[in-house]
Image 1 (cartoon, rainbow, N blue to C red):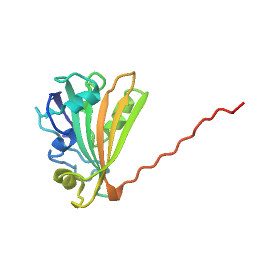
Image 2: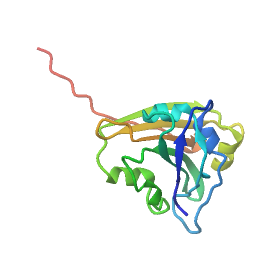
Image 3: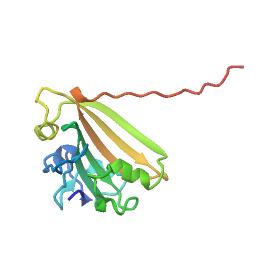
Length: 178
């Protein structure tokens, strides 16, 4: 266990993360911080996945669906698609020992990261995986990463609204005025 599945990106109408949220969830006994769900082979994915990865429809991509836990409570549903050209051993990883992000970062530094953050009302399957009531919104972060000028990963990171906050701090370099 602990591995994802290869996919073929096909033309299809629909939103990818809601499709994948219907897969079963597995969490190893005594595991700390992570759970995992394998997707069944042969699942077709929406055109937006191919567009986000900047690959033609019909391209094979790797997929993982993982529920992350903290103090035995689900805090994140990670639905990730990865190009095999960048991470050919992605499906061989044991994501109960390290996260997909840790593995991908071990392959080389990122040059560019894109985040799109939304507050959404989740579907029933997502609520079940995150153990939240129907009235609780989620924080949905769509993340794409580029090392070497090409998109190699797109992920939908879904967090229960009551268990997550987003924080950022950065330094702005200003030129002195003449």
